[in-house]
Length: 90
Image (cartoon, rainbow, N blue to C red; front, side):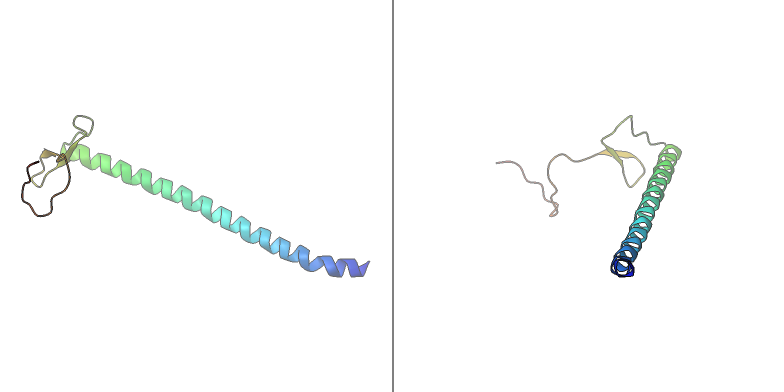
């Protein structure tokens, strides 16, 4: 009987260690996801407060971005042209 116990005990020990490690990883992941969700919620709330304080209404003009002077400007249609020259379609 002791031979069976001697053979199974290391496997049972390794299995228990594996179970505890996996449980710790899963709990840490769950905690990390909850913390990230709270941080995103806090950031979104802060962003909405800043937009309201500055008088920007996202729902009124969803395509607008705040300009350097705090006003609104429309996003440019088409591609980005880093050279600054205008190109007319041929």
